[in-house]
Image 1 (spheres, rainbow over the protein chains, first blue to last red):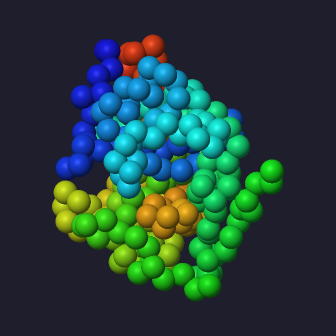
Image 2 (cartoon, chains in turn blue, cyan):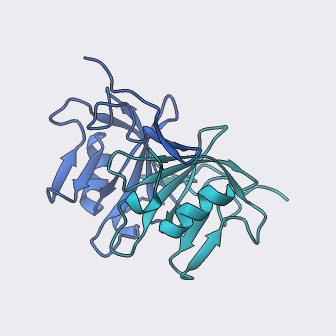
Length: 120
Length: 120
């Protein structure tokens, strides 16, 4: 069946959550949002393109930082209201310069930093 | 620093997305929503507990199906507006009886089913 971005279920703001997973390590890197046009652009260009809710504009991941996400595969969940993008991540995915945004673990009730910023 | 569920950033409905990842395989299994109380209950009980938006009630994953998610670790992202839960998943995570909800891949513009329902 041909895939149509319009067939996805978007929220009241026209957005769908997209989880980025490192295609090599399997690490979950980040979660951000897409609208139908960013889904289409991501598939067309092979560069993961989110919708920035704060800037209200398309956000080609890594366009300014160089920390691009090359799309390996996009997957849709059973309810069609969430996306998983398997990516080749260049450098850190997180704006804090860490590989993943999920660098804080809850262990025995305490917040523990489990990832350091990358060097260079 | 002690972790306080109230320190997270919830949306207008008081919810935060929670990504469940298989602690053993690294597979992303599903995404669902939590409110502050389900975050607290998940940490207290070690059973992943979402908030069902359709039923407007707590949803102890697997409570009726037996397909529980035992919490291995909860992680918070940099913006504190998304959670990652590493889980031991009993059986299928998806209501379609598949291991993961992300069983549809987009390949060359076509939707491809990449996971079959589990047996038994």
